[in-house]
Image (cartoon, rainbow, N blue to C red; front, top):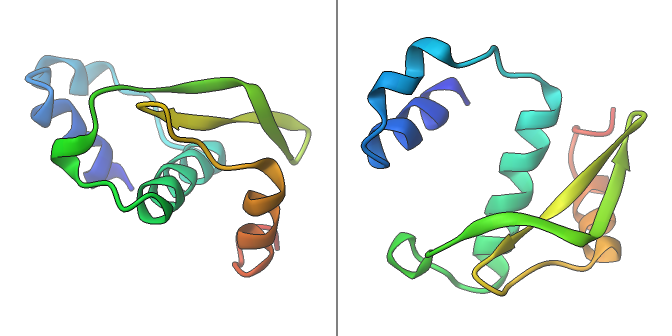
Length: 93
C-alpha cells in the first residue's frame, strides 16, 4: 500500500510530498480497495480517470468511522454493493 501511495505522489509530479506523508492505516487500505472496486466495476483505465473525490451522498461504517465512497469522474458504487464485496474479504475480520 505504501508503494502505491508513493507512486501516486510521483505520478502527480509531487515527490516532495512524500517526506510529509503520514503512516498508512486500515482506513487508507479500505479507501484504496473501494477505488479499485469502482475502477473494476466500471471498466475504467488510468487514462480514463480525471477526478477522484469522496461521494458526499454515500458512506459505509468501518469500525466506528464513516468512510465515504469514492466518486471517480461521475462513477460510484452503491453502499449495498460495497457491503457485499467487503463481506467476501478479510477486511471485516
